[in-house]
Image (cartoon, rainbow, N blue to C red; front, side, top):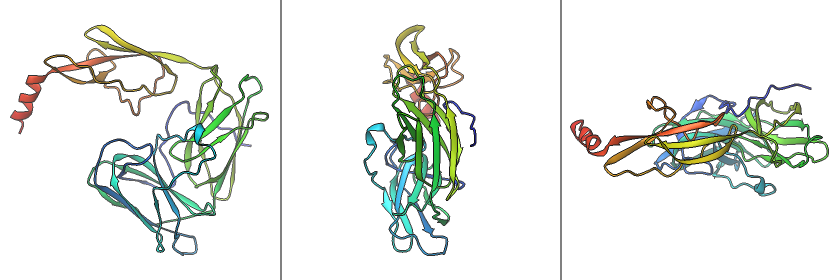
Length: 295
């Protein structure tokens, strides 16, 4: 049995293939609209086109909800008889692209698109037999023994056995992932860890201990005074509030210091302690004039 060192609340954006660019309007994706396209061809190891395989695109931050257990996810596309697929109406973002057939032969790409008009042709790749992931969560000292295990960027979630704490994924593409262990207990926090899976192989994880729940305070400051605050669990993300409004001023964003040297990224920055965010403003008239001068 292999032991894995937990990587608390970090997102390891690595997979089976190299990074490519793409964007689209799909589950878990960003909201920007574009006309981008992504396409690729996939085959079996004997060279036969992988026809009628399902294609799933998910933002690399996407997590399947516990309420979705037992529901069949809807694919975003399907390969044709030549093993080709394409998806239009692409939105900017970083994605995992999973292609799998009815026997769970699969392959996983990563895709990072930066241009809203980009058309990306990914290199051909091969569907392989599924990988397996088996693990055990230490739940003896937990009163509420309901624990879920999710995988970032995939339509995967399982519930660990409430007696043994054992969980199993049986249909994963060969890749490196970040899994998220989500307890229902209000006294324990989530934990994240990276795992590498290999086709036709069972990867073992043992002795996953759930840390006590840690909650931090997030305070929003404007003009040296607090205007809002919230409680956020350690390692989670801050929900972006509506932009404040002040007469004659243009809101530029939230920053972590009063000198406005570092802005807060609500999509990527995780809370790891108490956070104070400061509203930055610019004179609206000066900003508009500066834009006209630069035209």
